[in-house]
Amino acid sequence: MDAAEFRKRGKEMVDYVADYLEKIEKRQVFPDVEPGYLRPLIADCAPQDPESFEDVFKDIEKIIMPGVTHWHSPYFFAYFPSASSFPALLADMLCGGIGCVGFSWAASPACTELETVMLDWLGKMVNLPKEFLAEKDGQGGGVIQGSASEATLIALLAARTKIIRQVQSEKPELTEADIMGRLVAYASDQFCATLGTTSCCSFDKLLELGPICNKENIWMHIDAAYAGSAFICPEFRHLLNGVEFADSFNFNPHKWLLVNFDCSAMWVKKRSDLIGAFKLEPLYLQHHHQESGLVTDYRHWQIPLGRRFRSLKLWFVLRMYGVKGLQEHIRKHIRLSHQFEHLVLQDERFEICAEVVLGLVCFRLKGSNELNEALLKSINDAKKIHLVPCHLREKFVLRFAVCSRTVESTHIKFAWQHISQLATDLLKTWEHNHHQQ
Ligand SMILES: *Cc1c(COP(=O)(O)O)cnc(C)c1O
Image (cartoon, rainbow, N blue to C red; front, side, top):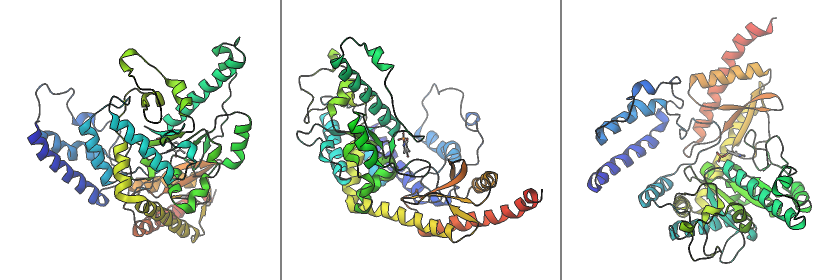
């Protein structure tokens, strides 16, 4: 494919994606395929001779789409949202076009510098304490990781290196292995200090945890993967109070801030803590600048060496939505989750299982776990909407997460009427089969 054909095909692909997203509601949210469906549909090995774009393109609807779960359908209420917006899609195209690998400042200065500034913008949007910002001469700063899981692992490794060095400076006779075996990581059954847990969006009390961590010289990492985006709204910012005690903080704009996957934002108060843990300087990666607020080599802030120009997505989205546009998006989702909550509360057969703070509603039929498992199965078998469950204190609970950028009140009403009808059908047969023992 040459540039001339790319121009033509690129426009066709943009049209295809725009059509897909514009009409996504008409597609069944969850696919009908069985495991292994795809292999028989394609060749056993890569073609020896090149194929045309048309050949590949026509297979999208034939082979790929039948096996796609449509995360951006307004009938998708599973997991947590996965962000998507047109500005982010365009930025990703540019990212692919530039195609740089920004492991050091010199490897592509714009890639590094835009990321540092975007993480400052984002940090200011959620009103992070100044220590977390890089600005011109700060000791902190932000970085884009691939996922919240990576951010947690990096915080753990940085904390480990930091404390080992500290102990060794006081007791030089101890080896790294002596110390390593005696380190302790404290966690709840949801792991580290979390704002908005995955199962039910509950919040740890940072104002209680934080001072203890500081007093005992324990690294505090905060995972706000989903909830973090909501802190751009002043009315939800109080949920982040106590972040001032943390060493590192992370949330995923790729969940709820309209920046397509992957974009997980992580900040540290002391960039030297991260760099200390990961710094590697083979000769071919060295250059004459010192690591500072002005020159950052992001390879020391992450596990991989290579990294994409992901800050373009943030830049496009933050500018083209503005803080106000993003606040509107968050507020709409939270309004819709409360709408669903109220519908559930009006039905005596159901109960709400956790306080609805943001865009997630945990609910169940009053009754056994088996009954609720059967309800979820009938919902997901019907494939009109898609939900996933969780366990809360041994109870099987259904999670209703407001996800799609284009979801509206009518979709919420439809989802509830559908669930309520399936519950009615289920309870009829259930009482017949299970109740009269
Ligand atoms: C979604 C989620 C994660 C995992 O996020 P990844 O970026 O996919 O690793 C971690 N923690 C919480 C609280 C989450 O909601």
